[in-house]
Length: 323
Length: 255
Ligand SMILES: Cc1cc2nc3c(=O)[nH]c(=O)nc-3n(C[C@H](O)[C@H](O)[C@H](O)COP(=O)(O)OP(=O)(O)OC[C@H]3O[C@@H](n4cnc5c(N)ncnc54)[C@H](O)[C@@H]3O)c2cc1C
Ligand SMILES: Nc1ncnc2c1ncn2[C@@H]1O[C@H](COP(=O)(O)O)[C@@H](O)[C@H]1O
Image (cartoon, rainbow over all chains, first blue to last red; front, side):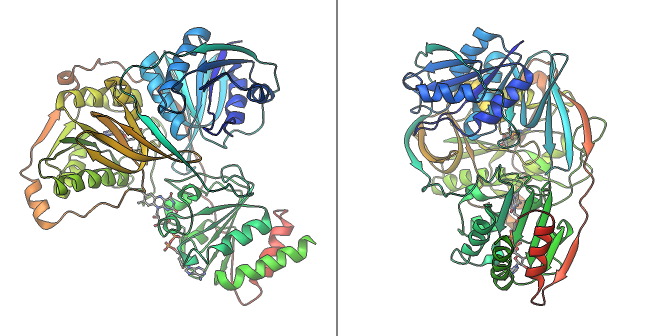
């Protein structure tokens, strides 16, 4: 079976990134998964065990003094070393900030081609096929690479399931310091303590708030409904621009794309750019006081009403029914 | 300082965008073409440096069909000094690899201290072209910045990472990409629109750039359109809508 490389990101605080599960699951559908990991020191036993659980048959562990101190270049050096060592059928990275820069540079360095923002992978007689969800899910496009190494960036949260666990064989290499052209990391500024809520990209229920919430104090209403439903919190760009919530919560064209079982839009008009990030949800609920708001065109259940009167009642009604 | 801003003409995200079901390529007739908003923000950042320091030269560069000249005209009316248009029939349907190789060659011949681009385009959403260019030119990339300070001795910026932000820096020349946390762009004023007509636009072909004529290696195999969503039930709240919604959620096993 051919090897498939997966670039595993490690947080600067330590710990395998959440994207690893989907990457190794996708790699396992295409061949034998090889996890490529860069770290400053030797890879921790816990990390090896975790990657085995997630299906890595092999681990290419690259130790580099530059890990965490130089942007992306160590990952590209590690990947190109692994391409030489394993002659893979494909290389997968997360469609993350670091992952796509690494994929892009690798493509130029080793003569590969990038298939970007992939939501599903499949192998057809040895050809790697990638599926994309384009223009907010309006189109499904299948693509492939001809005559070069396919390098796929995988949309985070899009791949379900987990590869069968394996006992990885670890090879350790040490990377030379890269030459010229590097960007230096001076400092990490961590996000405030992560809430106990589910992750936006993979949550089964998402409650989002828009400009209609009016202030960051009022935005707490969105969080209360989310917590009642065990949901993740999302937002429109207008809510992010107004400072009600962090940019990482933005759903839409230039934010996160979500496909939950249930999406609830509160005080969101439903501009086409917002719909581009949520219209593939199974069920859409909207509460908006403007009966002509475009969000109602895609809502399975719409309430024309004021969020400040409807949502508190909804929270009570849901609590009453779940008791 | 010479700053080249990479701008892409894209279908307006405010309209319904379409793909040609046969080729998988963009249906250019379906929606109006505009300068991608993220590139306007990148241009705005460059123009603010020019506002503060008159010695700054701002060049807008695009690779695209004849019609992309309109996008360049807009950047000139906003305040760019000149523009470069790479236009060649052989580039139709170019993938990200070919696009980046072509832009890298054009950047090499145009010259620059700083290249500014968008973190991702709204049509391709690939977010890979600037990093590919950086690799071709062996340059540092400060990608996905939410703010930047560009000076003669280097660039510093704040990068939006996956679980927080990072303070990053690089020497010049360098490439940086901006996110939509950068300020919105200015509108062209009357004087800008008039003077834009007199500003130089250089056109370049693939042969002039000496980029190998190779085909793009990514191929679209199939395109399927998803049926549009239908609107469901809409109730006007008379005090009972919340209860009705709770029942709907329970009946559909969504809570
Ligand atoms: C290139 C580009 C990319 C973009 N990307 C995104 C993106 O990723 N995500 C995104 O969301 N947007 C995006 N936008 C912006 C988008 O066009 C809209 O401006 C934005 O989605 C509007 O947010 P909103 O619905 O919260 O605000 P508004 O459009 O102002 O709507 C607020 C709504 O709240 C309702 N309301 C007010 N008070 C109440 C109340 N008390 N109770 C109930 N309802 C109330 C109003 O009736 C109104 O419908 C993008 C735009 C561009 C040009
Ligand atoms: N054809 C092009 N012409 C000029 N710049 C481009 C082109 N394609 C991509 N870019 C630049 O690269 C950025 C990211 O694009 P992409 O990698 O396609 O998502 C864009 O915001 C532009 O700044």
